[in-house]
Image 1 (cartoon, rainbow, N blue to C red):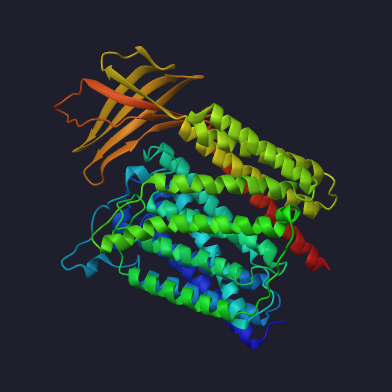
Image 2: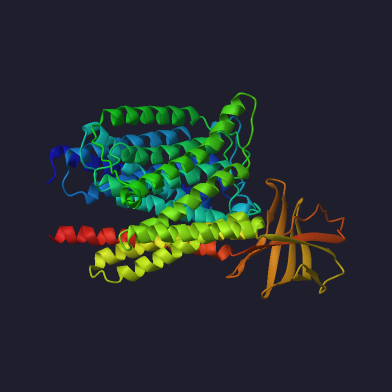
Length: 607
């Protein structure tokens, strides 16, 4: 039953949702009908774009992303209020904190408004055409990648707000956040999956993951959400009374920090924006909320639970969760330290970019331990602890023998042993789960199994595809059309090469036939744009054996000159399908757990 104060809060949120939706629709209208009187539309829109990409162009600038982020956050807060039939004290304080977060995002949007008129520029006249967007951004994955990122950020605001309310009121329990964490997690997973596909096939990043500063920060957010989803299991059993709420708050603050990094104008990255006057606002807000949270967390009264015992108790969920969370926290620190130390050194005039090897060398050992912990969790309670210990000992022994016998594939062999241990554990658990008669519990357990299976497939696919990747370089003259050439078992046949000119711009297109496990026709494009410079779009074919990438960097040419020779590379990433398939399993698994939570909620309402 709503009180007058509750009704006022709900009315405020509904009004905010309507007004923010109107602003988004107004901007969409301007992009659709090419209203170049708005600077933001002129910067990112063009008559050459289709209707779909005119709308997608809203997400290509920081002004538009601020607006969409604020809009989605308000809608999420509205969803939270509408789903709560009764408002407790913690719900009211949650809404207050959430509205403060939304208000901050709206302030950022107002400062970086996408509705600035072009006439504010002295002597400006209405442009006849817009700048459009880079050809590298014209792909279906672009709006999906960006929108799911903002969606994940928006859903992170509720767990953070509930956590702040929990700490402020010194509550004993905190409920209703897990589903928001899961939705945020699943959206960020889709963001990274589509981003990896996009980078691999469109932007020529030489792979799906290069530890770009924004990628490093994004994986930190994802790991924070993952850690929170593990901690909440023990939180409901009386543990992590301080850590869990701090994880939820940190996930939202990490979203803001990632935004700060993207808008710092320090990193020369495809993700970066050319600076922003909002950087100091982001920094101050992050610092204030962080210290506010820590102070209240330290004041929060908690009781510690400890488990003592010998080897048999080492496999207790309390201990395995503890080590899992500890390792995840270390990985979060590693992910955030790279971009952070670069920013610090940059302002000290000693900028140093940490190479991918910094992340990979640390992450491998952390992930290896996490993988074994996953297998232990899958088997715990289903086999005797002594049996579990002996199984682990066998896998460790096999790993050691393989590494000594085949020393040139250490990482692969070490992880293969862990992979098979976890796969066997998951299969064993799934067989045992068939005995569960409760549909809701069965759906939840299936989701948990799929998530952990997806995790190890992603890691295995990443290790195998990068460890066994090969590059094959081919040289052709233009009169060798139809000629077959081979390099280390991979063959190609040159089909065609063409150049299209538009004023001073041009696009080169290479068409070849690749013969490997099958025969595939592939095309690669290389643009020269007076506005965006040189842009390469490699052709990529995804298949069960792996990914094949046709990388053509082109060459300078003019209508009056004709190149005589072309050089291109064919890159093979074997077993990359394991990575993409594992990503899908992760997402589907979380969807199962969300479905189980919805079923549980409906059951409670019926009662």
